[in-house]
Length: 327
Image (cartoon, rainbow, N blue to C red; front, top):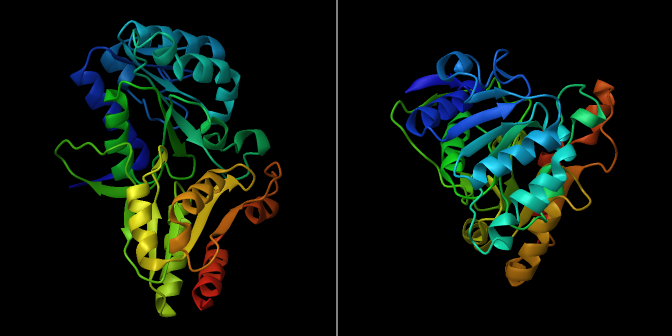
């Protein structure tokens, strides 16, 4: 086992897959000489050269379209979004092209590409750099959506995403890049369509993903001292949802809280709750409780920014309220 930073775990995944498969290449702004905005591609330019670590102009729609075309020919592009919010400029290429070409071509083309980069609410990055694009893309057919949350799952999931024959949106949280964890020295891959039971418990199921996994675990430390026994599930796969894992937990606890950094309206939580009500309504002892960000542009002011997203103390309060309910 070796202690590895989150961004280096991602770098290792890309390096290993590029060494394994010559069809894998990286493109994006500042990924080459500069090594990426968060150093995920640091030094890979020297190792693989400018044709496989390709610096692009500031033109997300253009280089995303180029990557789709490259994928159609059998290459495996990895797009780095300097900030995932910028990829709204490539929404057409991702949704109409990457997501649908396998279907509209009658299966003649596969689109094995990964679109990855930093997103989420950082520290005073302002509204335009605090986007949570998973909510924008969840309705697009043909896409897989993954949100990593630890160095271990970041590496294992990215390797699987690169090998997948479908377009994968791979979300990394901007505040997790310096997280550390011991990683296996041997190669490993993780499934793209499975949630992780982070903590087993019997009182209430807390469903979360990305950075909110860590806010939930902070709250759990307080809850354990108070005698509560919550089960924590990290979704990881946002599309498709792993309802085998979700259902097994709900049939045990019969109470659910969804914690997300996405905004409340049309967020991932909204889809999770709708699916739970469709499939598992009779298992619920209380309505599902949703803890989401406020439906406003994220303020630049640090104190106001903190107030827009869910904090550990709010999760503690929600569990206390939920577990106190008796039917």
